Length: 341
Image 1 (cartoon, helix red, strand yellow):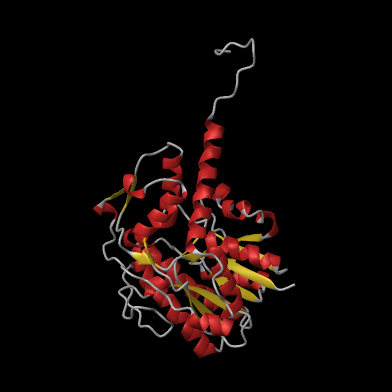
Image 2: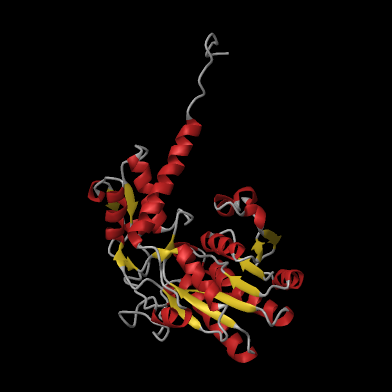
């Protein structure tokens, strides 16, 4: 039974990747940083019904000693480094933390693999945000990078360090330059979940408006479940390499709103408001990936269309809020019992 170590296993991608690996009969270990919210940290794994099937190990990406200890304890065949401070907007408020976790944390994992388990295959979660101020209208593996946020700069450092470890030490280290990928497990701070959660609240009468920032920014959105398949495929190749993972279709946040509200039978213009306080200091206006290399070398193609993805997310958020409403209802008072009893 092959062993896989996944950092960021409690996040969206980590949870779907763990589900995929378990289905392929892997023994799955996940690095988990202890925090004040430890009691809810495995909620995504629980939502997928796999929390009891993975091994969670205490550790921290910014502590080299813990990454070495875990590498020695698990001795994985494959390492998937998904852990990061991954919210772009927060990186402007926490640039040093973002650089430490997202950038240097990757090097700690690479060092742990190099020192303890050099035969392990390594996957680095790179990001389309590295393209930033785009230098080409469609981005490929050869498009120059131009990061426009502390998060993107940290990801770019991690990306090039992965390339350097591959070329300097002969490690099987691949990077997936993933464009935006979403799901019902996406954090509420990301714009797709912000929209679908807003639609659910408005549909159920819990809110009247949804406030957003730049509605004209466009992104190449896919389903996280599709994208973790690409991660696994990269580590099954004889030679390590870097791949753009995208759908090849770009959609504006304005059209994302239209799709989401329409699914719930609502007119988005009646509810969406724009506010400058939610604008980024430096915006990435357009991202559009060319996944040709992944299609040709990995045999990977996305299976879920954007409309189906958004519909799935809207339905999941409606179900979540309905469940909370039911929990908040007062219990029925048995006949003959005083309400004050």
